[in-house]
Structure formats: structure tokens, C-alpha cells
Amino acid sequence: MSQPRACSVARTLEIIGERWSLLVLREVFLGVRRFDAIHAATGAPRAVLVRRLHTLVAAGVLERRGYREEGARAREEYRLTEAGRDLQPVLTALMQWGDRYLAGPEGPPLHLSHAGCEAPVRARLVCEHGHVLDDNGRELSAEPAAHTAT
Image (cartoon, rainbow, N blue to C red; front, side):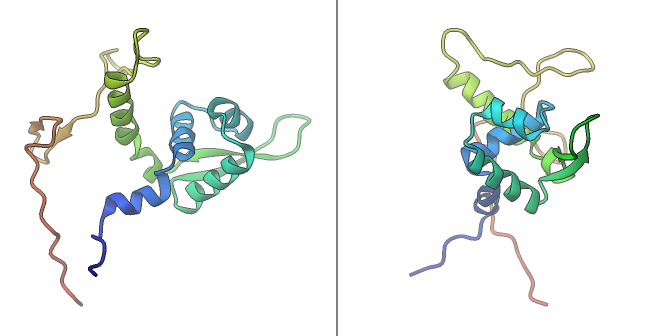
């Protein structure tokens, strides 16, 4: 029996490949940072939300920061790390797909636009030389990485 393919997709899914994790990330990207607000916006069961937040913090996707409102006890909110911010294109691509295939007659529930010019934003495949590829993946080439033993 052969070993499963070593894969960055599988490794990533170990951290964010669950519905509640992606919805937590959606909310934090939208500026929702506090547990109760994330809970209300996602509808995640509290115990599940606690576990997902712990996983995202442990993986370095989110970080906890303390805050204290006047007259209240100290609490923590959740902020994106650099690794977390780098997931924005992933969420944008998922949203695009959902908007295209699942939005229904009322249309997409959210529109992303460039804050600088108000133009719609979409995730695209672009090579390091700046060539924009078709979204269907037919222009991609994949080869196993050459690793040298040290």
C-alpha cells in the first residue's frame, strides 16, 4: 500500500478545512473580532467555536489580543496574523464560486470592491511574470518538488 500524496492542500485543510473555521475567518476578515459577535454571526455552537478559535490561534492564523471596556472585565479579541491575512484570496475564491453557483435569484449577499476605486474584486490565478490564467486550471502545470536530502 502506498503512502498518501504529500500535499499542502491536505495540510491546510487540517487547519481551515472545516465549515466553522472558514466562517470564523470570514467574520474576522469583515472586522468582527470578539467571541460573542463571532458566535452570533456564524451560529457556531459555543463549544465548537472555542475549539476552532483555539486551532486557528495555535496554527498562527489568528492571535488573541486583550481589551477591556470601561467597567468590564478584561477580555480577548481575535486578530488576523500575516498567515491569516494571506488566506483572503482563498475566502474570496470560495465566495466567488458560491456567488456563481449558489447565490439564487436574489443574487450574492455580499459584494467585494477595491476600497481605492470601488471596482469589484475577484480572485485570479496570476503567474509570477504577471500573466493572468484562466480560472479553469487548464493552463496550470504541476510537478513534484525536487527536495534534496541534507
